[in-house]
Structure formats: C-alpha cells, structure tokens
Amino acid sequence: MLLEIAGLTKHFGGLTAVADISFGIDKGEIIGLFGPNGSGKTTLLNLIAGLIPASAGRIVWKGKNIAGWQAHEIAAAGLVKTFQNPQLFAELTAIEHLMIAGHLALKRRLGWRRIATLIDPEYRNNSRALLERAEEVLGLCRLASARGLSAAELSYGEEKMLGVAMGLMCEPDLLLLDEPASGLGTVEIDNLETVLRDLKAHGTTLCVIDHKVGFLRKLADRAISLHHGAKIAEGTPDQVLRDPNVIMAYLGRAHAAI
Amino acid sequence: MKQGIWIAVVATALCVLPLVFNSDVALTILVFSYLQGMLAVSFNLIFGFTGQLSMFHAAAFGIAAYATHLFMQHLGVAYWSATVLAAALVAAVSVVVGAICFRFRLREFYFAVVTLAFSEMARLTVLNWNSLTNGSLGINLQEKPPLWLPGTGIVKLESTLAWYYLSLVALGATLLVCGRMVHSWMGRCFAAIRMNDELGDTLGINVFRYKLTAFVVGNMMAAVAGSLYAYFLGSLEPGFLSIDQSLGIVAMVLLGGRSVVAAPVVGAFVLTTLPHLIHFSAEIRSIVYGAILIFTILVMPQGIYGGLWQIMRRRHAA
Figure 1 (spheres, chains in turn brown, purple):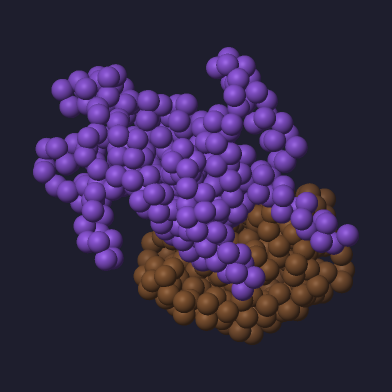
Figure 2 (cartoon, rainbow over the protein chains, first blue to last red; figure 1 turned 30 degrees about the horizontal axis):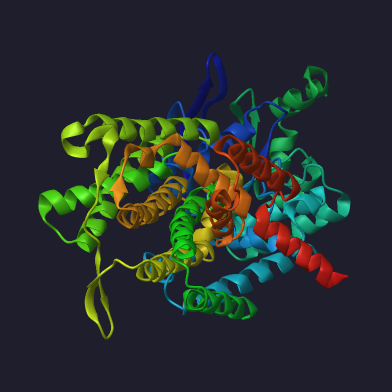
C-alpha cells in the first residue's frame, strides 16, 4: 500500500471537518473522492499534504508516518497537491513556473552538490535538462502556446492546467488534485482527462476530488464518498454512486428511497 | 553575451576612471558610494529578491565594524582575520535572529518590526557598553589595513586611490556572489518565496531554509562592507547601527531599482553624491534632497535603472 490513512480526524474548534477517516491507496490507481460541498474533501487533502496539522490519526506514506511533517518535506517524499483555486506566481511566465516547480527534481538529481553548481559553469547543463523537461510538460499539458505568458494573462483553464503541470514537474508518486475540472469547458475537461490518463500510464498514482460526477466516474478506478467529514461509501465509482447513503447525501431522502 | 560585454565595458571604465580623473574628493565620494552600494546590493538580496523587508541591515554593518576593531584590539589578530571573524559573528547573530523570525513565520511589517527591534537592541548595547565601545563618543581608528600588492609587496592602505580599487573589487565581489545566487536554482527558490511562499512550500521548497540563507548571506556581505567602511572613515560610532542607516539603504534600493542585481548601486551612487552636489544651506539642502527622492520614485517606480532601461528600449523600438 502506497498511502494508508487510519483514524484521521480534524477539528476546527467545535466543528469536526474530518471524522475518523481510514482508507488506503495502492500504487498506480486513480482514486476519486466524491462528496457534497463542505463534506471535508479539501480538508482531507490538505491534511495529507501537510498544509494543516491533523488533530488525530495516522498518515502512513511508503511505510512512514508522515503526520506532523511539514508540507515541503511531504512534497519531497513524493506526495504533491494542487490547489482548487489556482495558486500561481503573479509576475512569472508559465515556463518560469515550471522551472521553479522543477526544484525537487533538481534536488533529487544533485543532492548537496547543487550548492557547488552556484560556482560551477557546468551548471548550465543541468539547467538545460530541467528546461527541456519543463518544455515537455508544457507540451503534455497543452500549454505550449502559453509558454511566455505571465500568470495574469492566462485563461482560467490555463491557470488550472498550469497547476497540474507544476505538480508534474515535482515528479510525484502520488498527485492529489483538488477539483481540477471545476470551472473548465468541455474541451478543457477532455484535455485534462487525456493528461491524467497519460500520467497514470507513466506510473503516477492519482487522487482526484471533483464535483463533475461524469468526469470522475469515467476516470477513477475506485471511489470514496464523504459526508459531514465521514466516509460513507467506498468501492468502484458505479457502486459508490449507486449507494443509497451517497444518493441521500447528494440529493436528499426522497431520491434515496427510489 | 551582450550582458557580458556591458559588464566588461563598465568595469574597465571604472578601473581607468581614477587615472583620468584624479581628484581626491571625487575618489573619496566614489569609495563611499561603492561601500554603500555593497550594502544596498546585499540588502536587495533579502528585500528585492526574497521579499523580506529586513531592518537588520544597519545592525549587521555596525556590529561587524565594531567587532573588527574589538577583535584586533583584544585578540591581537590582523585586520583581515578580524574582518573574517566579524563576518562569522554577524553570520551567527543572523542565524539566531533569522531563525526566530522565520520559525514564527513573521511576514512583511511584522518581520520588519521585529528585525528593527533586534537592530535597536544591538544599537543600544553598543551605545551603553562604554568600557568596550566608548559609548556615544565612538572610537578613532588609527591603523589602516595592510594589503599585498603585486610588485610592491605588503603596503598599508593609506591613499584614497588604493581604497578606490579595494572598494571597487569588494563591490564587484558582492555583485558576483549575488548574481550567481539570483541567477540559479536558488534564485528561483527566492522568487517563489517572494511571490507565494505557500505554493513554494507545496512544491517542495524549504521556505525556512532559503529565507534564512538569503538573510545570512546578505548580512555577511553587509558585515564586510561595515569593516571596510569603518577603516576607510577612520572612526566608529553607534550611528552606524541607526534606523536612519537602515532606511537610507531602503531608499537606495527603491531609487536604484530592485529587480536587477546591480541596480541598487545606482541608487547608492546618487544618494551618496547628491548631498555633495547641492550647495545650499543645511535646511534647504534636506528639502531639495527629499524632493528629488520623492520625485524620482514617483516618476520611475522601477527605480532609475529600470526606468532608464525602459526608456532606452522604447527608443530602440521606435
């Protein structure tokens, strides 16, 4: 098991946003996280990525309990999260974003030798390799035409895609995607699906939150549904979406009875 | 490549300058400009590139100036060894101050205020520790640092000309170090921290480590500038660590520009030279000086360097 979560809980004052959730993610699968607004999906991903500290529970990543680690340590261990509202560097172009996101890849390749590259003219070669990779990722995410545009000039769809592209540059083992399809048009969603399938083919494990049930049903191998911070169903996407508890959570008691 | 040619042209011009234009007063002003330039460039590593408004720069400068003298007097070491020790001391102090500020995630004005408090702590210590620092009277520094020169061997640095070249080399070294850091993967980490440190964090950048790196390295360069400045001036006083000094450095960076490594040198040059060019009575001089500062910042928000570059590019395009 790549990631194993046991009894994960988060309280915000008197509110329990995530209540005693346990599940596991295997290498190479795509997990879909369903749930109505406020059901604790984003909080769950933020807990896993170390952006907020958990109140209780264990997050075991590749055999190590990472609960309490800092976000950059978790990212360096291969667990990377993208944001629901695109987070970008305002003054920089798309390609510059990807060069920054290449930090972990460079760090893995060079280790402490990267300090020496500050005075070593050979550094340019390392930098070129990183740039080539960044260009490749831009192409993969259909962002080649946005290469030189600054963050302010990108469309919403491009901003979201750039978030995914930055995640890719980190070379993660597990990529946590927080509503990557929200606010996107049909063409952009197809595009996103192609990119995510391509990622899976290259061995990246994905955990995706989305409201677009159709999109996630096609994409996910396995689904988990949350309601009021608790896990209410787990199984294949079809099983989960047919589950009476899930239907009740989304649509109310009347529909669940049918 | 083109940039390399420009650097070579400017460097050669500055090296030849004293041979053509040999006025002691002018050279003295240039030495002060270069040393202030070192301060401004190193401050900009922390402020302009990493986005942390440090008010500790004057403290790093002043602590090193005093420490160099005290190490020479009490440990009996030579000037250059004392300078290295002073820079090491400043590095140690910066690690403590930086670690406290960055561990508690102080940002923007909170960071500025807390570093200012540390800076005032250092200034008041210098001011009140009479037995060591001679308090508000300051200290006269009689000796001049020695330097080995090819051909003549070891000489005492007494002529302004020798100081001119020494300060030019020191400024060049500061620019080189900052340039290498900024135009590298480390500079990309600095940029990420400046613009969105939470995003940098999720991309695996150790925000604490790189903020601290910029702070410590910047302060160490200020320390070397402080050592040189005190021994060129020939005296030490608590005003070295004052808020005025820190604000002066901020003004140099804003005036010169903060997006290019060398731009603050322009601001340092203007602010050091200007008071000598305005021949009015003291009261009027401050007003004129202030008006020029305000006017320039209003007209050229990217600083003189950035503003001129933009004008040149526009003309080139037309």
